[in-house]
Image 1 (spheres, rainbow, N blue to C red):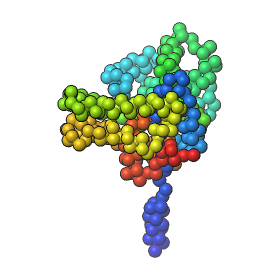
Image 2 (cartoon, rainbow, N blue to C red):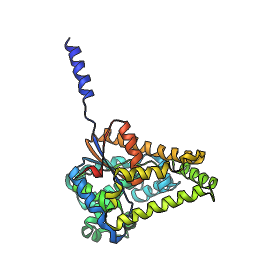
Image 3 (cartoon, rainbow, N blue to C red):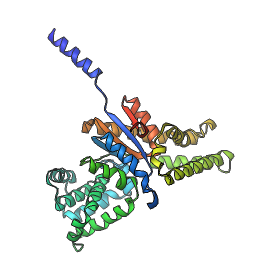
Image 4 (cartoon, rainbow, N blue to C red):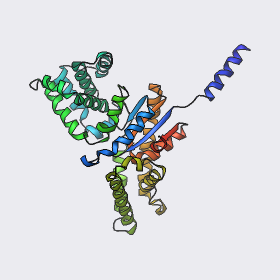
Length: 330
């Protein structure tokens, strides 16, 4: 009897278990200098939401198919040669990442931060490498005098780091995501992107464009994208870019344009393009789910280009998650 009672309590508690909350934030990937005002309201709202984990639009280090699209088809050979140049032998970078993660959390020093950057790079965890670049750049006056560029590794670090800063300085990572992680004392960000469908999606779009070349339907499609982009630009000039585009109506509009606009034509090329787009976003949702399971997150914030938000939300809600949009936060 006691065994049966205990089993019943376990079943009931599992049924009543509250799923973690997920905040989805659709972003612009960059704003020009005179539109940096667009980040602030979103930043303040996410701080108040106070996520315990953050998922980002970077590829996980073990996803070779995606990393080949991001870093180049020969990245494994390149990374191997870099490891030999910096370390002098082949190692398992994840072991060193774990070691320097602990050191940086316990007592961050300039050396340990640089070493953590190094091993994130060698592990091809580019999101967390770039997060370290943000933290280093935030305290650059302490780092710059110690960078002996006659040293092979430090010279390589300097050039890669400065390239990252220049490339990211106006984007969502250096102005929203990484500052939030720093403010919230989060030491690790969860890369959840999937680029394995890039070639398939590109081929489908090329076939679609060819099949509808010089037709009214294609002209209407291109005109709709142009109007969509102009509306985005206008809201950004009003400092309302993120507030406006993280609403139900706008997200529905973005999904219609991306994957529904030409569906009435029953064009197999458009259907293939839409299918591969949803396939990518379903895999991203699966990776967010995995990140929640691994981290034990109860309140995860997820940052992706705004076109991704509608389908990612759909797949996460199908898994039973409570998904919030930015417009629902005060």
